[in-house]
Image (cartoon, rainbow, N blue to C red; front, side):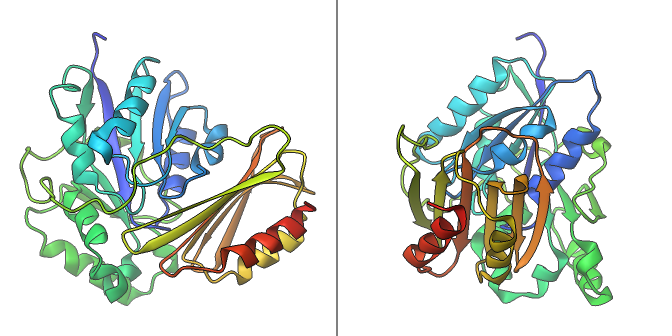
Length: 326
């Protein structure tokens, strides 16, 4: 490969809008460019790849926890597969519970220096979370912000002026200072931000030694033939997840599913589901449900629920199976 691929890490905690931001970037990318996205998810079944399927990019998923675990093998496998396609740009989305400094270390290693031109690391944050001890006391949340060169305050349309003040005050005390910051809504990030150069190596936040307390990673689970659905669970770093894959022949009742997701008291829900009204991506954060229709046909439905408390997965499964007629 004669040209090093411009690469960005887009990080941020659960529910901050990373996938929406990447979808907006893909929508606005130059028409003649071929982009690749490596998506890492805490859950086991892999949902984000399907959400991005309409984005016109090469997508590779690494589910099941932080992709820099197990000596970085899952991440390297994903990166190598995408680099072989010779994309014009590579975007890497670590899990909201991942360690971006470890990803930076891999991308700047001798293995990838001839192939990857790592640009600024971008962290998304909901300004409201900077006043919430649940987030500010979380080591992953703090590492993601510390590792970033650029801070994007997303969901500003849901913030009050006091939230914006906290965001601005937080920025003023960062050492070293962030290269760039911006308040946006709906993940509307300008393309030009991707070409900002990263800070000099070995700056604060790049040499984290956080322990990896979750299991080795497995490949994306596929639904076996003649099986209506599968369920997979994961846990680590104080969070629990449960995911389901349902056969494409089963359709969820759209209204019942929307109502159930609206009532579900979980920190994060992601789903790509075949319904009675078509195929839709559901994104739930803080019990706010957003829905987008996507043009996937014959794709297995995938649902992932993440929470800091162990939830009654079997009860939830019974409801899901009823809604989709299994």
